[in-house]
Image 1 (cartoon, rainbow, N blue to C red):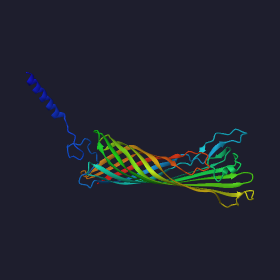
Image 2: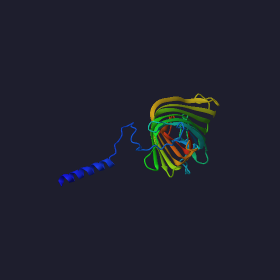
Image 3: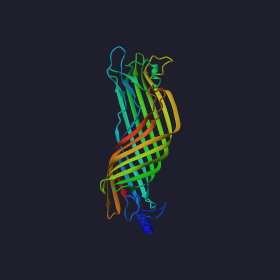
Image 4: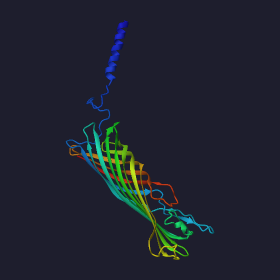
Length: 358
């Protein structure tokens, strides 16, 4: 009896092992027939497995710590109303992205390259109306004037940015459940960013009428590694919600040039004052350095896709919100600057993407 029970027990164990044990193939093996993480494409039949993309972007760009004047400064005799720090009036502007990609035969990997172009500008003007004004930039040794709240009659700030970026990634898009796909990726990112910031003060006191102007130019380039993940939460085969995240670290060079210019239209004359109506450069300096800068990128929105002409072509359209945070990107020359800390650069707004696979 005991030998029979032992035989039955061993036989049952072997049957369960045959039914439930699934061998794990080595990397690069053609087995098993079913993928653990099936390819999510999108792919087409009888094509070259390439795709192109085009994005319309409508973004706003903003930089920290670019206040050009503060209001609400009294004369220490009478009370003053509440003032505020004045920044350029940030605006919204269009731009574009263009990309090209290829689906590879090796484990359904894909490569993708994308170029981004964007330009924006902002300006603001503040005039003295009751409240006095305090300069946030010490331009052309402005503190040498006996600054009273009513000395500055007008202040103006102008800022613009030219933004260019190239992203190249290697990834794989796959299902981790019936309705959820992931595309983890690694790659490289390069960028060129030119920013210009100009501040002007009009001053008038008992003996002098003058204009002070600061020209601050920052040229940046960087190249480095990036990594991230793209997700799609499918409602049905055509519609889905997407959410993307990317992190980058760029080895960067900053080339910063600042020039301060003073032009007097009235002064007391003498050796201690510049000639009238003649621009005089009071400060002119460069600051070039290398460093490592981090970037965070986020995106989320709604996506729709269709396969056309018996799956020979694939078309996708999506619309969503995108944000980019360039950490400590504000490195304008702050010599004689009342505020000493740097600031970040923020890009955000609407992004509409079209994709065509063939």
